Length: 276
Length: 291
Image (cartoon, rainbow over all chains, first blue to last red; front, side, top):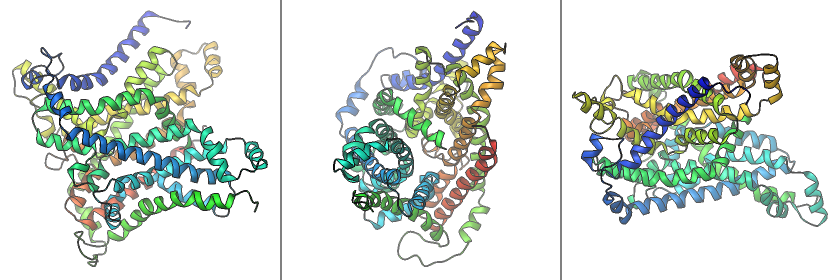
């Protein structure tokens, strides 16, 4: 820092703080809202509650619906992560390490998936899921989510696997290790950062997904949390303190998770953008 | 072929990914094209072939026109509001200091929030009885303004929320690009006496042009796909004035079981996404030359 003129520095700080306030205030109002009475929520939506009331939170946390939604979402998202990371890394490994006829065509074929938004195919997807008897079944969400993450995951993983030194495989081959064994014993353990990146990305996408569960799930006991929260809103239409408390309880874990994994999320995002 | 197990790996490792991808991505896309030529309510056999009738209805549908127009508005807001804001913030924050990291974390946080939760939070903020407008109305002693139910202004709320949610995402792309600009280039310009504005204009911006163009591409495909944010905020209302293409598809295709019609909307959306992405890529990215 050679030039630290005071005025530009102050302007910079003021501007950044202003934008930060615009981001934080709605979140703060949400977190505080659950502790307020309805009257206070109306009078001072952004203020500190004059009396902290915990009843709304206690109601939600002692009821079963909240935990059911959370558990359903967790099962679906974790399964989608495991399945995507496993299938995509196996395919990416073959594309990166083994030369075979048709490899290029298959890769272009998978790349098509980068261009399809979920919504385009949602109508026939619904009937496809129905045909497999997977409506009102977590698998009806897990499998399509995995399929739609596949292209992105394969592209990221393949470019990483290609950078692994070839000599490593030659050495392992001499010791009697084939391609299959090499994948599990060397490739996967050497690739934990990129596996974490792909995994975090798939998790966030699956966790936040609304359209697919909306179409697939009818039975309330199977609802994921975005469906549950909309259901909850329908029940307590103007009781904003309840709704805000429910929102707080679902976004707080997400924000904490994000603070710890943002390195991986940003890596996935910028890697994807560099590749185009 | 060597006896190194490459054939085994091929047979074991490829099919799961290919199978899932084909069954749940490729097959439905093609099936959408097929279904879009039929009138079907979802029950029984698909026999009522109507040719291009679904597309005809769609092209004449004024709500669909509105939702296309809404996507264009979102796109313009993204290009003229969101991306410039993200660019300014990226230029202010790309150096690695702990204060910068903290700001980056804050600005990126909305991107991680679920769209549904974001929509709910803002529907509270904009609610005429409880949020900002209620507070302002109480202070001024006037009637509250129910912006979410106002045909003229409701879509502005969606624009605001979309900008709020995604500016940090574009900022992160620019930051990554700025950090990759060789620092000796910037230093050389500074030694030659270039002002910081000139350094930005003649050195930094040209060097990250590629990232900016990609950002615009993401903004285009993103604007076409907005859905989750709209549902809790306006649900497409008042009187269907705030639909996006996807919420239009859901409301008039899936929810009412107009299967053929919904499939046709999906096909049009697909064509728009791929078409604009390809044209844009051709025009801006491949020809651009830089990087």
